[in-house]
Image 1 (cartoon, rainbow, N blue to C red):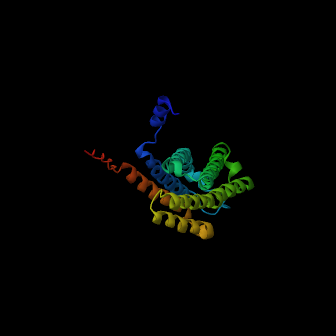
Image 2 (image 1 turned 60 degrees about the vertical axis):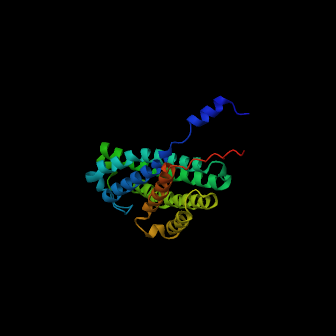
Image 3 (image 1 turned 120 degrees about the vertical axis):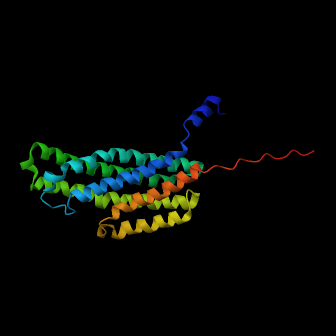
Amino acid sequence: MISGKDTLTRTSLRTPKAAAIAGIAFSILLVLIVLLLRLSVPTDPLEPGAWLETNSRRVALAMNLVPFDGVAFLWFIGVLRDRLGQREDRFFSTVFFGSGLLFLAMLFTAAAIIAAIIFVFATEPNLIINSATYRVTRTIAYDLMNVYAIKMAAVFMVSTSTVTIYTGLAPRWIAFLGFGLAAIILFVGQAITWSIFILPTWVFLISTYILIDNLRPRAEATPLASGD
């Protein structure tokens, strides 16, 4: 038996209708972060580190945005699970939740490595430029973000699209688009320089749909007329 207190607690913890805006915020922040990095740091992970002398502040700004982006992505995952409700499938939900967390973990790790490079350069500039240590750490950060993180993003998109088809979370065309974009990331992602933009674009699309759907006024149930 559910008490009145439990009912009140569940009501007070109900997800706000505008919570899907977290997915939009995640998309915008991730695009901004990647743009700052791509405009400031050469794509070659073995470059000597000349960007540290001219663009370190811009890169530091991008790294400071990563935690906010991570919080927005976690909130977006929460919005998806709340929308699924009792229809949530344990298997696929575990995969999409786990892949989302792995994506964030790799993104945060890459950001921490880049932030450490900037910090060491600020204290010992001659020690980091064109050193073997710099090349190793720079390559690790590059692989984490551009190989492993985006592969987990593809798994997240596939599992979320599968859940969408079976539960009606969003229109089926969004799910099929997710499958197609995830396939691009999995099989040819490394050959496409800007493939990391695929995830935020898809999240922006599904978040916009959920936001519009949540804010759409619902038709009130018409009471049945009492018979004589």
